[in-house]
Image 1 (cartoon, helix red, strand yellow):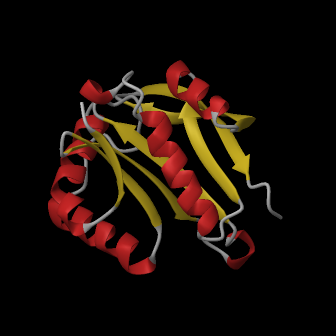
Image 2 (cartoon, one colour):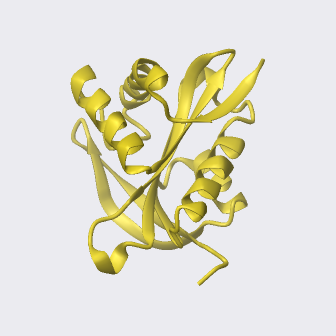
Image 3 (tube, helix red, strand yellow):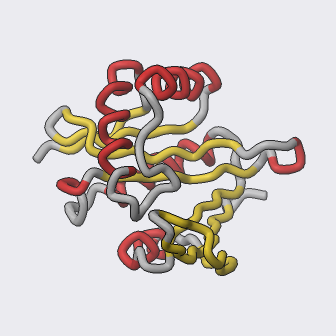
Amino acid sequence: MRLSVEALAPRHFDGLRRALDSVAREKRYLAFTEAPSIEECRAFYASIIANGWCQRIALLDGEVVGWCDVLPTHGQARSHVGTLGIGLVPSARRRGIGEPLMRAAIEAAWASGLRRIELTVRTDNHNAKALYERLGFVVEGLQRRSFRVDGEYADSYAMALLSDEP
């Protein structure tokens, strides 16, 4: 197993969209239940690069198996805040990939000037919550019925990580 974590580049676009679609169709981890169109994804990924935003890609033996991004929130008063999103295809889970992927994205987010990173995780996603807590994220609240898939509601936790720098 040869793992590499890289900044998003155009060569990753199609593999990243496939990974996103794979995780989305599980209907457990993301707000998406399927990936947007190839064209929409390519345009979104290109905007991440063009704006210098933070997205890291996990490659296992050269294949995209996951991503972690920390994208800016809207509004001048929240310009120091980013929202973290992460996903790993099923075959890449529980293999020690999530932590180095997240660490790389968090480091890039701090380097870009962000000082707070927020995320949302379903309350039944115990493995992800444990990873986030290991990396210093703290639960700030419970969001009731924040996900609805196939008519079923799920609660989530709002979590955040603050930079050591003010």
